[in-house]
Length: 334
Ligand code: NAD
Ligand code: LMR
Image (cartoon, rainbow, N blue to C red; front, side):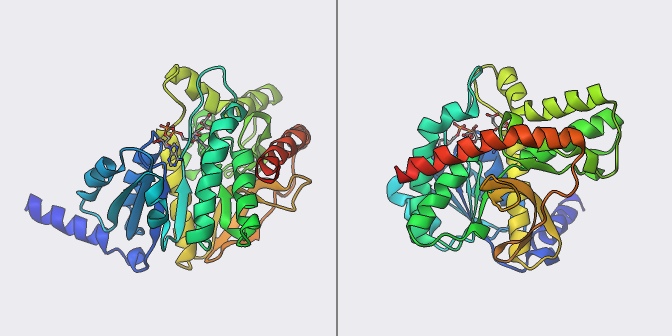
């Protein structure tokens, strides 16, 4: 009886109605702290049919391990630069968590020197092999790595600003978790838009637009906002030199990747906050809620009405964002 019901559960998971479409997903940096649990969550989803795991080390082992799961996606590992193009061939979605993480005392911008060239080289391969893929970038500093990938694709003549995303979902996930905790709500029922960028003052949680609506005294609102802005550093400190957020990032990255796939499948009303090419502010790239569709961004939903406190946060964020964006663009163009 036990065995039978397990089989039925497994089958109904694999052939649920939302699994009729094909989605081929590559994870670049698949052997890392984020890459492994992210690949696990993607392998677990019935929405994924093919999982292509690329890294410069250890992918044969990670792929062999995940391939034993009784879920729908076929899994293949690709190891080292010689196998990169094969890893990307035919992919609908490419998620990039490749690159070094912070240690205590570092800013995300301190990762630029190492991670800029990693993202550039992956983007060069994407431009050649799967220029129509939807690309989600996790590698920090996101404020600069998204402009880097975009400039590479632009130079290659295949840039589509609707298809390149900085994954800032973890900021939303954290805001939801912290506000739910403060108000004793079910986090699954809370939604806080987070706009701007993905580092320190550029992270702008819009608590005035929380659903359900919540109120805090000014000092508590400031403290919560700062905790959301510095949440990455909170994890870096707690991990004491062994890295930054990996498990919560894998959760957030999987949520974003699956939203891209749902949109590719034609599901309506798929909305995520994400750092994208934007006309919403003077910063060329800016995170806002966007409506996702089969070709990536269907509509940038902007950020609506800000409270006076949030308008002040925005004012502080813009110069920092513009500097980060320029640095990324200069890396490719100078
Ligand atoms: P990690 O060191 O555990 O893993 C990184 C992986 O990238 C390693 O397996 C490494 O071999 C691989 N890699 C290195 N160079 C590569 C290349 N050229 N091609 C493919 N793979 C390559 O690091 P992590 O904890 O997984 O973090 C990865 C990145 O994600 C960091 O830059 C970190 O700052 C960033 N991050 C971003 C967010 C976000 O919210 N966007 C959250 C957490 C971490
Ligand atoms: C995060 O927000 O957790 C990531 O950007 C990693 C970091 O360096 O803080």
